[in-house]
Image (cartoon, rainbow over all chains, first blue to last red):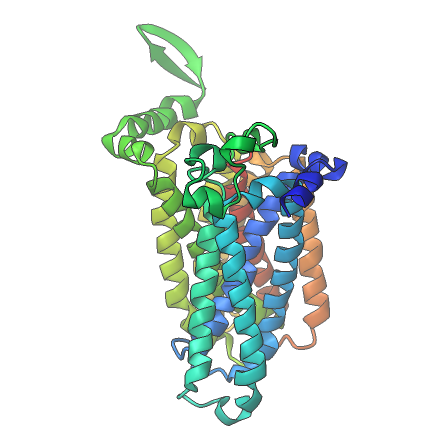
Length: 200
Length: 224
């Protein structure tokens, strides 16, 4: 997989994207700002399912009128996120926070699937009810915690504390993020300079 | 223009240099700023809370704006909705200001010389004034304009426009045009489900524009 991302890292479009003074910041800013739409609306739907807010609003109205905005936000997030990854694949591949973010993202998406398949089925029975089924509340709590964790790990990607060049070679963490190990350290090019001054 | 003094010599300087720069300079030398700058973890965590608060603020503000535009919870009254999200909006605003001050303490001198930062600050002031002083009051009065609402609205719009004109670049202006196009699309697509007056729709759209300007300018501080 690393070889593939190393190849991707050298494709002309990837280089052009990460060196662009306009396109990269625009993509990054769009990715971050979409948080207001995507995470913002998902928080509201989760708070409704947890019974902590909007108790007078039927759950079906939340999902019919607010979730389309969440999905729209998610599409923008995915498109800009994939392009940002394409611009610096090796940097993200070796980043521990990026890996955590992807794992939690997969968990959040599995949770969405679970909600649609198992929880939403009998929605009509508790649409306006003040007592929301346990599995719906659990799904909402998982969703809320997962998106918060994704925002935290996403923000931390910018910091280089655990980058390969700062880790002890052959340590557990170094192994976890697939750092080139001591014997072939010089043989593989590292994306180290890319992160310089990026912590903002 | 004003007159500044350095080492006994007097010279022409802008009023910002005379009155604002010393404040930033003094704060930057303070033990509190040193504490933030010396810590490895304060700025990353403040940045994280800043983002989480931004998400909550976005949800709380947009939910009401979308409702007014006909594109949200149309079966709920704007009054009830506004009342529900109000504590969340205040919580988010409080968290964003506190985390923002901590973030600022880490790079005060960079911020002083940063146009995106000043756009962000003035736009934030305008957005708070507009959302809380115009939009929410208009919702409470069911769309009836009072002189107070009009005056507050005029001040907020003038501050926002002036800040945008002074501190934005070509890219920001293009982005604003795209945003206005997207908002027109929303108004056009959902005008049939909107039971609000044209004034309230305009106010909701302007609230979205002001908050997005603030957030975008805030993010741009890092790129400038």
